Structure formats: C-alpha cells, structure tokens
Image (tube, rainbow, N blue to C red; front, side):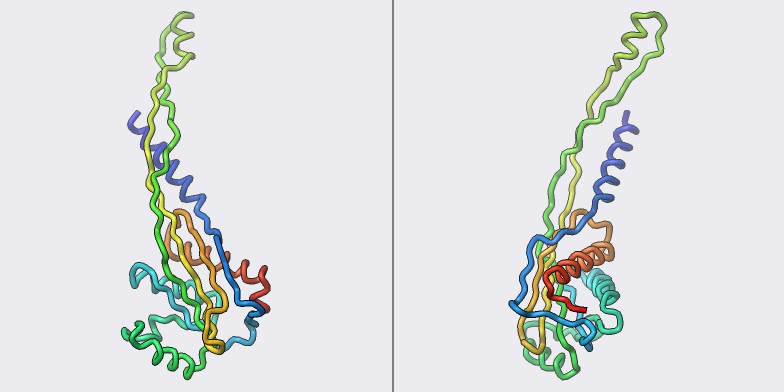
Length: 204
C-alpha cells in the first residue's frame, strides 16, 4: 500500500510537470510603436532573477532568439549596475550602439497546495466459493489523500527603446511548475514573441 501511494504521488507529480505551461496574462504597447527586427543592430538582454546562475541561463536562452544581435548583460555590465549609476549606464549603452533593452524580471512566486484525488487501494483475497468470490470482486479499498506543493512564476518583460528613451512594450507572464529556468525562459520567449506579432509590434 505504501509503495502504491508513492507511485501515485510520483505519477501526479509527473502530470503536473508535463502540464507545465506559460501564458501571458497582460500586455501593453505604446500606441503606434513597432520594431523591424531586420533593422536592429544590438539589443541588451537583462534578466533580474533570484540568483546569478538563473540570470546567466535566462539571458543566454533569450539571446538565442536574437541570434547575433543579442548581448547578455552579465558580460557587458559591471557590478555598478544599479539606480545610483542609472544615467551613466544609459549613456554608455547608447554610445556603444545599442537599439534597445529587453528587461525580464521576477515579480512573484505564487506557492499553492494542490489537493491530490484519493487513490483507491484495492485488496483482493484469494478465497474459493461463491460467497468469498463475491466479496473478492466487490473489492475492499482504502483512500489515500495528500497535497502537493506547486509554484507559479510571475515575470514581467519590458522592451525599452533607447531612441525613444521609454518602455514601448511590456508583458506579464505566468509559468506553472517550470522544470527549469531554460525551459521557462524558452516558453516565455515564445509566448511573448507570438503576442508581439499578433499585436503588430514586431514587423519582420
């Protein structure tokens, strides 16, 4: 029975993982603004996540979509990247020929306990005779109920135009139970790109 419960727990966990998905819950675009991807020169990628390791992975994943036009911030910016030196950094980015910035940052991690449906543990007794046969096939069972902790990651992605000196597009996404930072960033990139194309923000 214990083994059956463990198996059920593993199967339920696998189901949650396999259903991992990202959806965009809101987006905003500055009126009449759009970008032509073939006209871009350089775009700085900044991922402000919970640690440097995840930042590194996320930035490199986003760069794949921009190919040679994307530059990861952890190689470009120094430890002085903070509000104190905001103006100097903006000036440096402009001087170095960047068109804009993609800024992804973690807003929240929603934690929730999900109730797992009861799993019937069937007990069969190998008795002979009709009466015992009936009891055998009527199945006795016990219910096992438990909870599984889940996480939903909420991230905001801003597109900042250095020419306009303002944010021209922003979107908020939710990712349920991502199996890893690369997978999550990949899903977010796909969802955001699709949204931008639908809105007419990206023009190839």
